[in-house]
Each structure stands twice: as C-alpha cells, then as structure tokens.
Image (cartoon, rainbow, N blue to C red; front, side):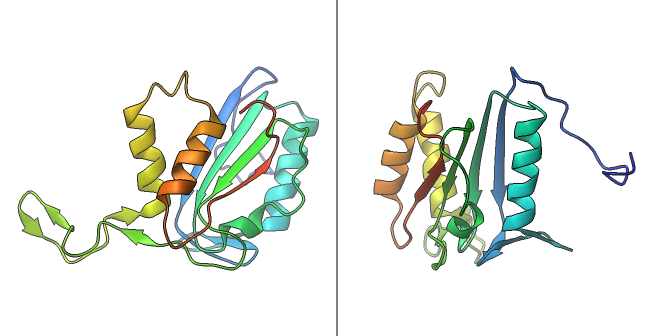
Amino acid sequence: SKTTGGLPVLKSDSNSKVFVYFADHGAPGLLAFPKSHLYADTLNSAINTMTEKKMFDQLVFYIEACESGSMFPDIASNTGVYAMTAANATETSRAHYCYPNDTVNGTEIHAYLGDTFSNKWMEDSDAYDINKRSLATQHTTVKRKTRYSHVQQFGDLSYQ
C-alpha cells in the first residue's frame, strides 16, 4: 500500500495479543536499525494509530537497547500497551556472556553472546510456563537479575 511502501503489515484485530521484541542499538529517543532509526514520537504515533484502529487486545514490547527507557515517555496506563525496557532513558544496556564465558562448542569466539536483559527474560521464559507467568513476575525477576542497568516498565500494568 502507499502508506507502508509495500512493506509487511501486522494483520491483527481487537482480539490479538501482540508481542514485539527489539534488540539492537539505541540512544535517547531512538532505536537504531541497520539503515535507519525509529524515533520515540513515531513509535508512539504508531501505537496510538493501532489503538484507534483496534489492532490489538494487548500489545507488549520488550526492548533491548541503550537508553530504551526513553521510547515510551507518553504511553498511557489504560491502553492495553505494556513495555519493558533493558535500561532507563539515560543509561546503557550491558552485554552478557563475555570472556571467559564466550565459548561455543569448545571454541572461545571473542565476542559478546547476548545482552543481560534479553538473556534474563529468555532464561526466565524457558524456566517457567509463560502461559502462567505474569508480566509483573517476569519484570521483578528480570529487574533483580539484570545488573548495571535499570529495567523499566511502562504503560498498562493492569493485565500483567
């Protein structure tokens, strides 16, 4: 379509439970993609449009990026939108599984194998039945286990 430039569009409705996970670089008020940026005002405008068009029942964001807490400054608490971020609006998000824990199949690869926030929520999801574990419980666990950055939550906390 003209509005999407031929790019894929989320086909959801008012009964949909939508999960968005982003892991890459960030800075205050933006998320970085390989060839572009997504700014907080653009993201929040898209969320507002999706809310108006009833494109979800629940919309959950998990954002792994430096300064990711800056992406949701105006998110309302009664919209069905929940966001958990790896860091607050002014700090970096930290790498995980660094030397000497960067071994794959017995070979040290000299690279960071993940980010602390992402590893902690994925490990938590593997350890528990995610159909029975609340977002609040996962947030508490991930926040406690994530060192060097402050895991944040935004938006509608009522269904967590």
